[in-house]
Image (cartoon, rainbow, N blue to C red; front, side, top):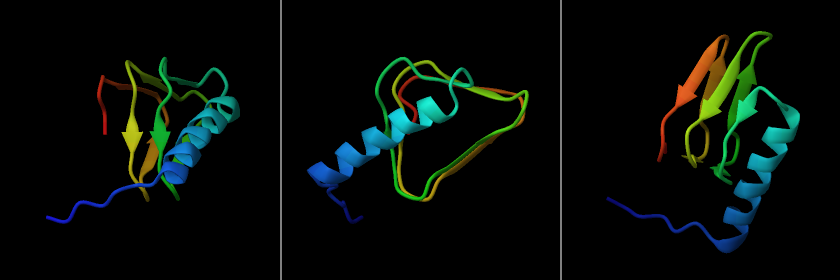
Length: 78
């Protein structure tokens, strides 16, 4: 198995993506701790949908999350 180290600027950008996502879906995306969102991730929350995280989340590159209803994510989700 090959381990890929993510650099400092990648991590900073991943946290910035998280804060942008919280602002974009204000009130529909709730996560209590700063998290990391990888490159080219897609978050789609429809009219009555919402995403609620119990703790911090870490998403790698190219991940899609779609919510039409309530989506609850537990702690230490990756």
